[in-house]
Image 1 (tube, rainbow over the protein chains, first blue to last red):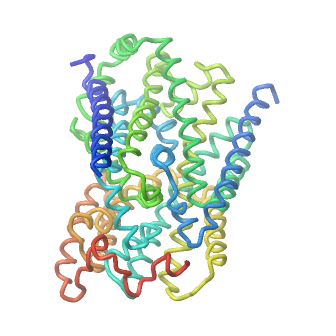
Image 2: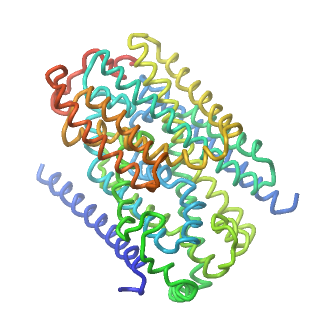
Image 3: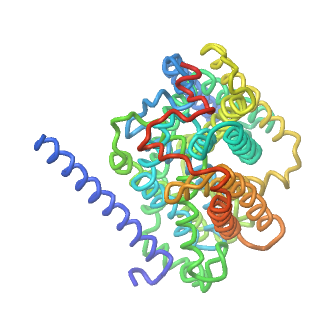
Length: 40
Length: 502
């Protein structure tokens, strides 16, 4: 438990997960797009 | 009028001027060679505008007015439930939008009913599918538009000290004007401006609340009032079981991926735009706006004796913010409502002027100018219809038919829009899915105690089953069409928009 409230714990965990996963997905796809461009 | 009234009027009229200017500036887009200019902004939206319009349309006035009230009454469960719209939008953008855009682009679809029709067949049956999808969308979304006009009218009336009728007429009048001028481009650009205002509003409210009351103090106060506000034993108002709140995620995903007024945005992006570039804006905007219902918890902690839960946000604005700041935030809340209302109006009018027209008169041969005139007239006509319904329809009908509208429309369209991306059926399956979704979800919401999430989800399950079952049984009579993305063939009997209006 982060702050002794399951509702807010889930809220914080999911917020952090969403932002992190979106950023990682963005970085990975940009990297892949750039590397395929440089190969071409 | 006192100084603050003048300020409020100044803010409102200034925002009207900017919105109408954006409509005028975007009217160049609708003068492109085909109907796509008005219906899908000439496929011209970049990643930020695409993200802005998706988030602004998805987060309606509910997030700013209704949700804080629910948080005041039920506690932090609402903060969690409301949040699920953010990940749902990101998932839909990352994993579904690309497929939908590719298919629709290859078919030349400019609206979701047209996409459904072209994907499932050709000829008279395909036109019937397009007509039915358009008609159900118009009926269900018109009720939702009416409730949005009422919400914006009520807030504007209390903000400016005028009557509801004048306020609603003024607000919808401006929305009609800029939507007529610029079609979806105007809607998307104004949405983007408005979502920036909404995000600023969310930041201002968070700063005020957490400088006055630290998060730890807020939690401690709520726990002292009622521990169930933070640690409820059920997920009410989402359901008895704690896990019911997580059902909002699939609901919100389908909401973003399937509903015509959300999904049409995926068709309007520039061909070179990648969806991860859209998602990187959707995620932070969505997370930021999902913080707004915390206002309900703050008011509960500071003023637990407030008699009506739905007054949490108005009470907050009038008691905890400076009147100037309160006025600006109220404008941003009006933006949240207007950004949903303009999208609904554009979708309903497109369904009437494009889909019903093509379903009834497939070979009308109208000129581009004539088609644009029809599209613009439909915006005016249906906007005025929404206003008249708001003024004269019974209030009890408007209060819950809005939920029936989107939830039931989701159950109607899940088969032909979403299931079809995994397993493609035929026109008979699409028709069966639409009618069974309408009856099941509508029946659950009207005649049972199931909540606004569970009823439509049951409707979705029945509709999806009927889509597959009826398609399987009728493939001998109506075979599955070739994959649009692979064949890139012009469907026979169903004129492509680019061809028919180009």
